[in-house]
Length: 174
Image (tube, rainbow, N blue to C red; front, top):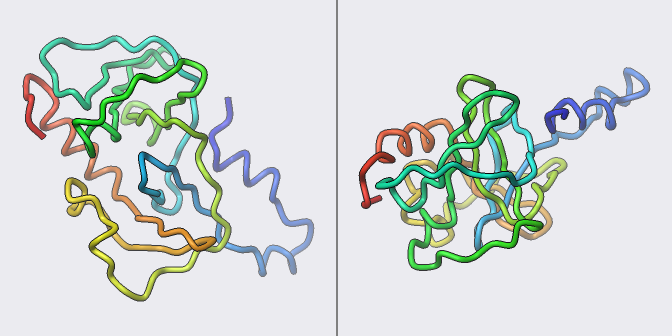
């Protein structure tokens, strides 16, 4: 299975040097609940189909457990539950994927209900808009972007995952 960046590079590869010089920026984003998140440029990401998650008793509700991805153990987090703990929802197996971020051995994933979006040449928002930033993620949002009249929050996923690792085991609080 290819990662998103290498697949896009192959598909969108410029035929000439002139086309390469005018190439637009391509970014990846994903949506959780009502929020749109933009991954940092050059983030290694991959989508995996849902498989069995091995839960760990006594962990925070937003830590789903671990999956086996190509022989590697990968932690899976439910960002939707982290953002809205009261909105735990049942998911059908056919409509769920794992968005895996980072390279092994540092890979971790989020549960997503729809495939990631490809944003071509998004523009950075000139105004700060704290109303659109989920309170639980305010320390992990780098900037705000606009694309197709939708607001995208650029997330520092590495810092967020470090926060998750520090607060996962035997902690029912966020």
